[in-house]
Every structure is written in structure tokens, then in C-alpha cells.
Length: 115
Image (tube, rainbow, N blue to C red; front, side, top):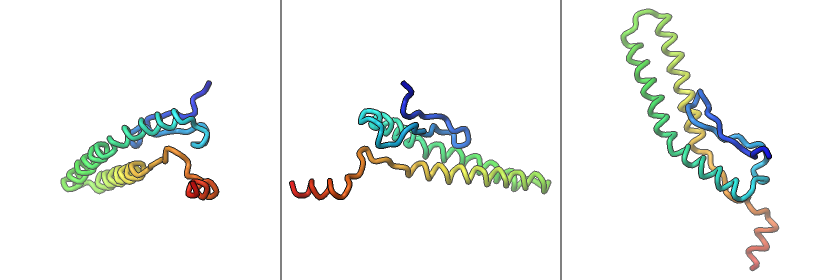
């Protein structure tokens, strides 16, 4: 049986990302738990990855300050913009949260309140 999800390394971001092969609601309780646990471990390393990319930006900025060739300066700035985009995407992934359980619908919530 094919797994309902997997994690794969995103070369650009330098972290593993989750890929679902079915809707979240169709995952078993155990699959959700395992997936969230693994994702939280990955997310814990995102700040370290951001720091690594920031160091790359700092290195390029130092090179720009010393460089006299305009074409090289332009190439270095393109690299800086690429690294900045990676940092932005890492920040977005760091904020991704998935509820363990589905949000109850209105009728279910109303029934639970009456108990």
C-alpha cells in the first residue's frame, strides 16, 4: 500500500517538506501524529537554516563592497536576492501549523456545548 504522505528534501530551501498524497482528513490518527511530529522536528531546524543563508548573504555583501567589475556586482546582487527569497520562504514554512484534529463543524460544536 502506498503511503499517504512523504517528506522530501527541497534542494532550494535545504529542508525536507511534507507532501500529502491524500486529503489531511483522510489520514489516520497515527499518520497525522507521526507527520506532525516529524514536521515539528524539521521546523525546529529552520532558524539554523536561515542563519546559514544569512551568512551567505553577508559573504556576498562583502564581495560586493570589494568588487569593481559591474557585471560581477550584478551577479552577486542576483545571488543576494535569491538568498533573500529563500529566507522569506523558510519563514513562511516555519509558520505552517496543522491542527491534529479537524475543526468541528457548527452542528457538532453546538451538540458538544449542550453536554
